[in-house]
Image 1 (tube, rainbow, N blue to C red):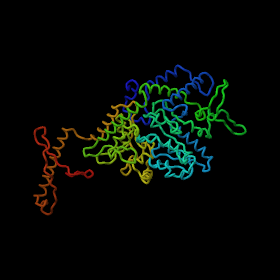
Image 2 (cartoon, helix red, strand yellow):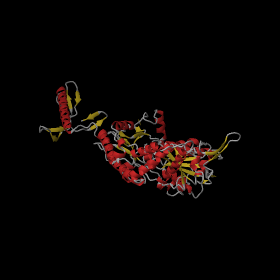
Image 3 (cartoon, rainbow, N blue to C red):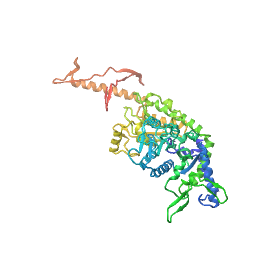
Image 4 (cartoon, rainbow, N blue to C red):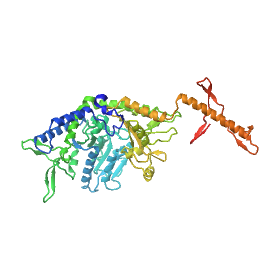
Length: 564
């Protein structure tokens, strides 16, 4: 499969599938074939090419929903540029609706593992208690159970957002929260809606677990299809129909989303998302939610490509369950390989980050997590230790990997709460990093006061192989564990020379200072000096010429000084 469908991956080892996965050759070919064979017009027009495009878009919309396991009877799909655009669409709707509340704002809660795009929604709220970052799963449980309101007024308009999977560590968060919020018996959360960021989750996990029960599914779910298929560059907002009416109340409207607009005299418009009407031929049209939310001309060529990508993906991998099983096996292999790597002095090579609440790495419990698709995706976030226990710069690790044809990602990876929780930063330490001039991106400060400011992230995809994992593990071994280590033959010569130099220097010192006294002092005529005698060398091996080689004992190392 790699040779036939992914030959363009031969230039290196690609381990940044969380950024985007890689497209199959057949997807591009089939898309190009349809573009050459057919004439596609703007779906907003009424001519035959436009009608052809419109029918294609409707067909791909339904195909995509079914691929995700979302029944079109209960869910609608709004095509957007990417997951961030979907998040912003929901956020703008809540901001508009909040203007009609007495508080003038909606309450917003988000999990600390949220992508930057989810964090940004807080800027649309008003007031010091209008948003809350949940610093742990336990805090979310407190809020749902009513043990702590975190500033939310009972029954107020609210939005709770969190990722199905951390884009930083690959940790998968509980999918049960959305249903529990909707069915809150106290009615305290009756006007609280849920937004699930599934961009990372959908990459290697079946989404049927999310949508199989419309009664417990999120109100809004965002995805980026290029993270699943590699191409095209388009995203989606999956809307639970019983909740979607709230989005149709937004203020802004773009071309194609309204059926009638008044500009002269009073200003009003009729959204297609709220309207049911009858066609000239007498057929009824219910006015799908997506029609009132997809502003302007749809990227219909990209949507055409999406349909081809889904078909090819099914043919190559069979199902997302197969992808999940395959990538879970690979990430377990990668974790175990990294876990086993140590320097000669026993120092671990890597520090792997998971939830931040507990250190499964130190407790040796990672084997229970990595490989279990219920709680972990195909992503590992880590840092590299030097032999003396200090951190290597994550930017240096990425550059070394890139120079070796291995493509990972490093830094904060657009997850500010997750990365600083994983690194166990306190607020003052983050302020110190800001004061020192650190910022996100490749030009930031990788290590401040011996504490890293980011991580290296390796993520696997459907077309990743065991060989990809092995090559990366070998890269870590060669460039860190074995870097600078001499060969066996040169090691013998080095030890011989060290021993000779040691005895020569001691002999010279003895002749210069006079005989050694019993208390360790030497007579020099007018003064004394102390000579530290080496321990007796021990035979270690037989040299090339049959002579016994001697190994001086290294007592300790302080900085660049060695005590022998």
